[in-house]
Image (cartoon, rainbow, N blue to C red; front, top):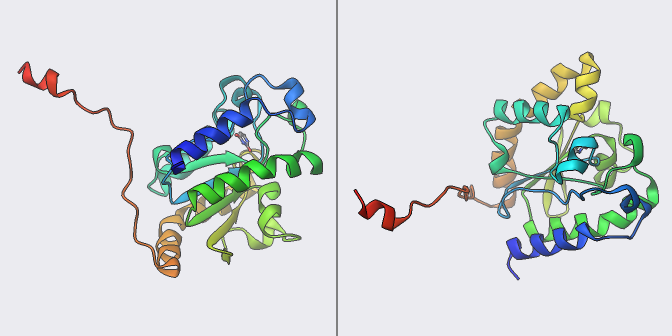
Length: 211
Ligand code: URA
């Protein structure tokens, strides 16, 4: 199976998963989305109301802010893979619990292994906790650390920055550093920039013949 097929297989399993109780209130699971060859993987916390309706990550208010932050870093959603530590919505958007994080981690680990991203950006304390046990987000945000075969950068969650104005300058500054950190990560891993595989609509040669 190639990476794209592996990601599709994981998404299929997630959509019918019953490994924790979060599936009970699930409308749509949110496995994550983005190109299979993305160099950057963003990991948020879990789907909220809109994500549960649409089955897509970060499509509500926090997602709009994430789009702005990405644009500021010169990237679009089409360049990155976005997922969460839990793939089904916790009731009333409560924090994900340890058993839910543990069951869903199997899917996240498989996504990371299949994609082998150069950089993982964690959004919020739950995804940070997966890579940097015991770290304080206020102290480590924006720092890039080599963890295993890749680099990890912890950032504030966009929803936190939306609700606490004091965090906004920090999240803006951290996202602005992303292009420079990506170059640093590529150098550290001895990788070159991956050619973006845009989802461009191919022009139909038959159509071209009409003109
Ligand atoms: N917040 C998250 O952490 N993830 C989403 O997908 C949406 C909001």
